[in-house]
Length: 174
Image (cartoon, rainbow, N blue to C red):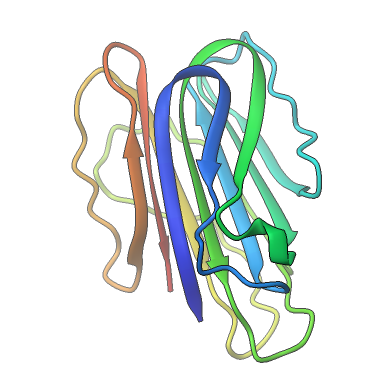
C-alpha cells in the first residue's frame, strides 16, 4: 500500500525532502531528483540509498534511488548535493508490503524533448502480482505547467521551482 509522499523545489546546492512521518521499518522508499543543469555534478552517493537510474537530457538531469526504511527514517531529511546551485525538484514516496523484504525489482527512465502534454513511461517488466508501478515525470521550462496524469495513475506528490529555467515534477503510481 502507499504510505506517504513529499516533494520540494528550489534553487539550491543541498536538495532535501522530508521522508513521511508515517514510514516504518521495512517500508520501500523511492527518491527522485531533477535539476535544471547538466554542468554541475550530482553526488550520486546518498548514505543508505541505492542508485536506481541516472538520466541526462538537454540541460536537465534526473536521478532515482531506493531504500528499505529503518525506524529512524520517519520524518528524517534526505539530501542530495550538487557542485553548484541548480533549480531542482525532489520527491520521495513510501510503500508498505505484507510480503517480507519487498523491493524495487525493475526500473526504467527516458528523456524526451517533446513539448506535448501527453505523459508516457518507458516499458518496465512487472515482477509479480501486487506490484506497484511508480512514475515520476519532470520537465524544465520557464512557464507554469499543469500536470495531467494518465487515468490509471494516482498523483502522490507535485513540486515546482520558479523563474527562468525552473523544473517541476509530479509523482504518481498505480
